[in-house]
Length: 496
Image (cartoon, rainbow, N blue to C red; front, side, top):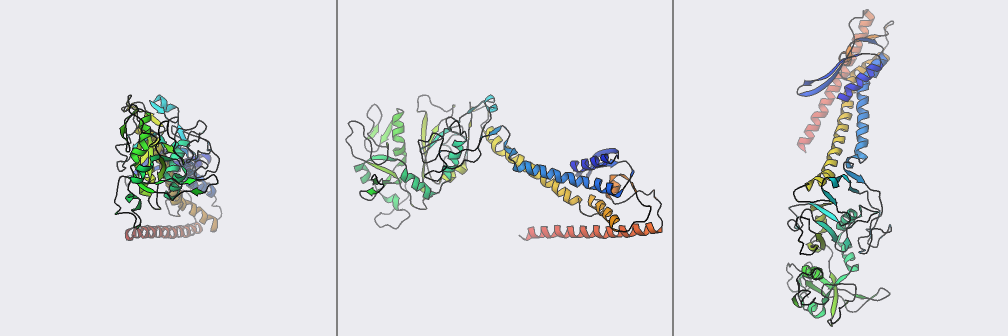
């Protein structure tokens, strides 16, 4: 409304009409702005220009804020955009942050525009973790990860994908995180079959049950499949140099994924680990052989290990998204870090990966302590503030457009009524000698009235009566139609 009235004042100034006062008053608890202009005699064209200046400024305001809303300006606060680039393929664990525009899994593609922390955050007590991974900003209480994945932790790896960003592509980690957790279960099954497996002893693998592998089938070879914390693994089929498979069909067995995925990691950092074949072990009592080591087809055995091993991998049936296993390698926050323990630990998540994406918020800024600076601030600035700015631009733009359209209605007392009155003067025959009118302030002009200082003859009075009659009819018709539209809209909302 202020911009609307400012438009009237500017247009009046261009017509050399002084502004007497500006301000606002409350009309039914609604603030209404006004501009009071000095009485002055104006031609009809000047009256149209002054009356239409308010809606014109509202339309310009709407265009400006609409462009701001769609230009991405809401993402500017304390964040600096990075250039678009290709991101690493999520099925290539050796990727160093670069890749071609096509990947074997179909995920390596042109990156969307990402955002990296602005250097000012370091002066507020935050650490940029792009060289290490993604910081956990928030974990939803509805997620099974709540209580296990601490806020402030750094996720350095998801399955076989390192999340440390390359220097030339700072946003690659965020792109990999979103793309990897968004893939469908069918694509995930294909990726698991192409990725490395895990080594387990032959005789131990054959002795395990297979009940968890048939929970969604009617295969009679499985005995009363029941829910279990174990997951279904299959022996990896040997492939020849020409890509064909050899040997017997894969065997399906139920294994504990936590022990299998974390055994070699614990041993590597000097922690005690449990080998289901040999029992508890540590680097001081033996490594437990090649159990849990990674493999493609054959398992590499250390010197003195004469055991026979099978390379196994996760088995997923179509529609078993809740059976997916996701390994998150976590670096604890500084205030929870144990100096005597390993630098990272592995969390196994069982379920749809889309739930991780929905329930876990990540970023690049880690506070130095648990007390200050606040953990929520970067996440709030990055997610909430842009939304507020976008909604503010949208609200101001829509209000300006609505105010312009409303004021252009041909109702007496509005700008549209003045413009309609001027149009009638152009269309209807005018009495001779009546070239100018008294301009009795903007409020008087918007009511469609003119100064009373002019003498009117019989012809002029008849002309005025005809014009005022047409204006009243058009004004009342517009008001009635507007009221019917409002009533119909409210009724439709009530009925629906």
